[in-house]
Every structure is written in C-alpha cells, then in structure tokens.
Length: 228
Image 1 (tube, rainbow, N blue to C red):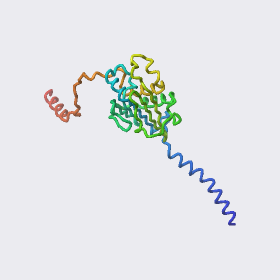
Image 2: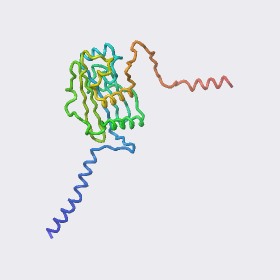
Image 3: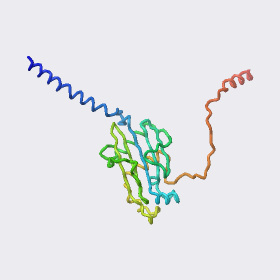
Image 4: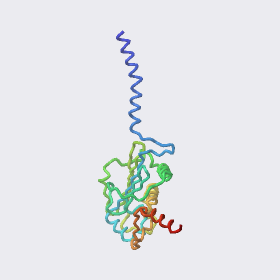
C-alpha cells in the first residue's frame, strides 16, 4: 500500500511540476498585443563624441550628419519621446519630453528595428557598464539599448573620424555601420532633429496658455441681455 501511495505521489508531482515551471517562466515576459508591440518596449539611444571631434562639430555643426552629433533619445512604452542634444549628455541622463508618438508610429519604429536586425536580444554585442564607455579624442560611440518582452540588450558601435578628415567628403563616414546609421537617423527624425541644425539666433515669442476663460459664461449672458 505504501509503495502504491509513493507511486501515485510521484506521478502527481511529475504532472504538476512542468505546469508550475512554465507559469514561472511566463511571468518574466510582458504582454504582446496583436500588432506585435510589447507593453514594456523601450528604445534608448545615445551618441557620444570625443573632445577633439566635438570641437570640430561645434565649429560647423551643419557639416556633420545628425547621427554623429552628441545626443540622447528615449522612446517609452506609452509613446513618449524624450530627447536632447549636447556634449554633456551621458547614458544615465533623462532628457525632457519632446513629443508623444502615435501607436502606429511606435509599431512602425519597432518594425524598422526588426528589419535592421536590432529587434531581438541576439543583436546585442555589449554587456558591460555603459557608464564606463568613454570616446577617444576623435572617436564616436553610438549606443542603442532596447527592451522588449521582458528582455533587454545593448548594441554599441564605435569608430574614429581622423582629425584631417573633411565632413564634406562622403567617404569620411564609410567607417560607420549603415544599420546603426539608419536607426539613429530614424530616432533623430522622430525627435525633429535634422542634418541642418536650427538657427539659435532666431528668438520665438513665448506664448503662455492660462487655460479656459472662467468669465466667458458671464460675458455670454451679458451679450444675450443686450441683444434682447
């Protein structure tokens, strides 16, 4: 009898354990909608340049393509895009909000990441501390950190632009990974950043929104009395 009970217990454990194990694994992944967009999807991009190259870029920013200028961009799961530009930006900085993307734009952006073969963990090539990355004097470091369906991975590209290289010569940028170039330019475009930087000398008037007029209904009452 005791032997039969042990066999029954072993059989029950053999049936139950795979179900418990599979439930534990599924808890680490996020919900994926019918359009393939995971609820935890994040795209985090950083471009850092060395001090010498940074001086050259500041001297003539319009001569350098946007994906090589120091910048940060973060696309959050709800479509909020945070972005900023500047040599002092690091991988741990959180820029201010630039805009909110429509869901269709989010879906399309992730499709583009998939086409570039950046949309899965197998694309990751860096597992160290990103804060320890420092560009050389004439070096560019492009960082793309992605999160999706409970997984995250980092893609790093780094290359040098020689001091005597001219930004007007297209061959200067042959050292750049074309796939990373496409990804960075796409994010820059969504953040309204282009190869031609904005003219900082133009000062636009500040317009303040104080909300709806609390006295409008009384004005409407007065106008109706006068018309009668």
